Image (tube, rainbow, N blue to C red; front, top):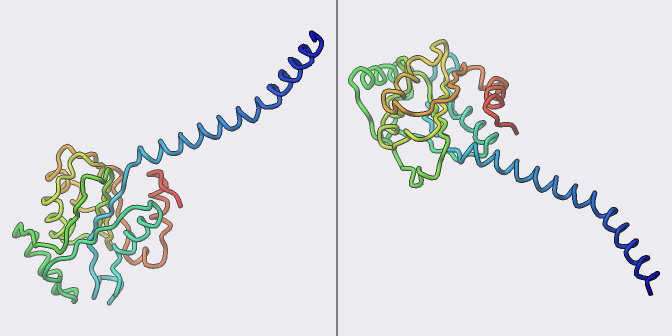
Length: 213
C-alpha cells in the first residue's frame, strides 16, 4: 500500500512539472494582453473635430473633398476615432477670392459663425484632434465657434492644419487663449497639395504619437 502511495506521489509530481510551463506561458500571455489593454486605455477615446473647404482652393484648384478632410479621414482610419465635421450653417463661398474676403471679415471682426449639428457625448472623449486649413494665420473662425461651445480644457488636444506655406500660424496660441490650461500635444501642419497624394508625413506624425495601423 505504501509502495502504491509513493508511486502515485511521483506521478503527481511529474504531472505538475509538465503542466508548469504551460501555466507560466498562459499567465505571461494574459499579462501581455492586459498591458496592451492598459496602454490603449491610457490613450483614451478619440474624437477628430475638423473643418474642411471644398471648391476652389489655393494650389490645388477646384476640389470635391477638402485637404483637411483627407487628413482627418486618415487619422480616423489609423486611430479608430470618431469624426465630427464642423459645417458652417451658411456655407462659405466656393471661389478662393470670395472665401478669403469672408475669412478676413470674420477674423478681424472677431465673429463666430454658427455651425450645423452638435456632439452629444463630448464628455466621453479624452483626446480631441482639432483640424482645419490655415485661413488668415489660424483656423477658420467657425472652428473657434466650436471651441467656445464645448469645454475641452481637461482633454488632450492635438492640433493639425493644412496650408500652403503658413505652417501652424497662430492656431496653437489661439487655442491657448480659449483653453489656457489645456494639454496641447504635438501640433503639426501639412501641405495641402501633398496630402492629396501622399500621407507619409501624416503617418510618421501619428506614429510619434503612438498610433499605428
